Image (cartoon, rainbow, N blue to C red; front, side, top):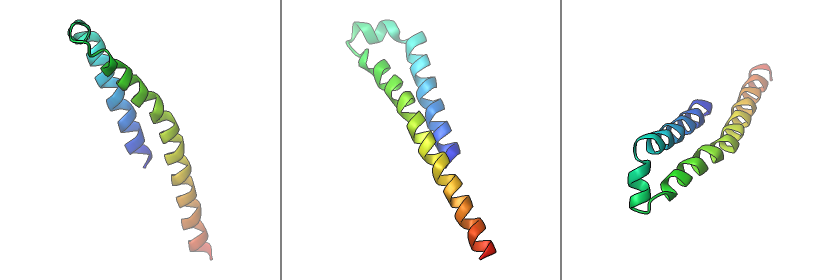
Length: 70
């Protein structure tokens, strides 16, 4: 699950940077600057998601080890 969360973070970051670098003028002219904020929000919300996925994977590993020993 962690690679999925990391991939999501990377996608939001890359799309946000692309829009910021190459499309900022167009976004401003057409009133779509909220797209940049959406990318930032997606990127920032990805960190709690990453933490949840890391915890989930750790719990799954612990359960598998307990099942092997038990």
